[in-house]
Length: 576
Image (cartoon, rainbow, N blue to C red; front, side):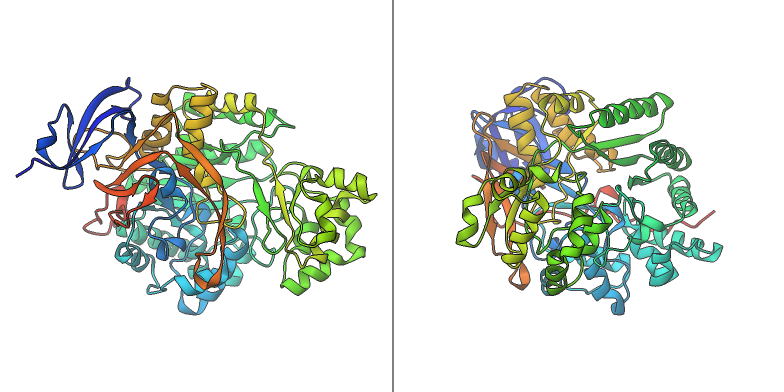
């Protein structure tokens, strides 16, 4: 009988620890790395030839919104196509548990704008065989998975469950009894396997308000009381367990940062801060943020940030676009039914306000947006023109160019907005901080216009191979071991004996991100935009081959990682 189920032979091992690469073999038994070194082919039931390939730990993505998609897509694509073997769900305080049956429709409606997940897909693809958070995790566990899932506890559903929808949306301070119940629910959720809590806390209006409910109103966590965050932080301190993820922008950077520090100090646990991003027109933003993060480290506070390192842009139409919500005028004009949006975007009375409040935070200057998909023949002369150039040719304001065409084409015109972080030297500055985590794929969200799940492949191709910003050893530590350690993944992120066998085997010289595609593969007849990878010879999740030669094998070896390891706590932890 063979000693190993399979052995990966002859590859160049980059083990995720930042130690130098070495040539060797990896023996796998029962989903775990049983040996690393020199292993005979005869010792394995199956041999994977990794000659000429890099063998490294699977990538860990801490910022996804696969809470719905995981129920109809075991691969959580596009993430798994780019070597990601573990993801975190429940980010930004958004999720589907606990949710009372009568609130299911409303909870799905919320996600149609803030994360741009199609309503038809959620209604057709989610089983809704749960009410409480522990029941939700049980449902996730029953669902076939080709990728590991680690769950945050999102705070918006807790607020609505305890306070009621109207009070939670109004930002009322919970009573002491309500605070106790919110904390009890967090304890219950973490006993069931939740690994901490998350919340988006953006201002209810103004230039920092970029993610809103479907009707343009703030999300419950945007208006939650600071004291609620403090009570939740105390739960983690008492448990000495879990971590926090928070997107916090009040318009006062000093106040934001003090609150991050307070949460980290009060809880004694890691705080994952979102997001460090370079804005080419204001590089002082990321530089100042990086300086502050270094100061947190010097104080001994575990405030760890994720950085946006992908240059994936946004291909969008006004059928589903929500990333102009930092302008109230644009938010008002782009909410409502299709007919209402058509009428508002065509309204000449609104146009001046839209021109006076052109957004730029999410996508860069509006004038630089490119027309990439005109539908009518008469408009195709403007194909690949920026709005600014099209305006010069037609004698129109760029806003009129954009909206006249969109309205004329029933909101189906496609536009492309490049991200505001195109300067390679600014990216180099961000990459130079060894403790900034790569990521923020937003996997499962914005599926009609964003493909940021490509970031691991892009990191290797662009940051390492093309620009030589960091070594391959450093890249794999930051793509796997660092996020795994920060978020409480137990034993994952490195290749060592006894670790779960989450492994990527890829062709370093020929690895690449493939062009955009549109797939009509979502439930409810919906479509999405994707980018595949080329060069992943094998991806293994818990020792099983889930991807071979860039193709799915339909092996569902992923696990729900309750408490970071897949093990439910035996008993609830009573409050002191």
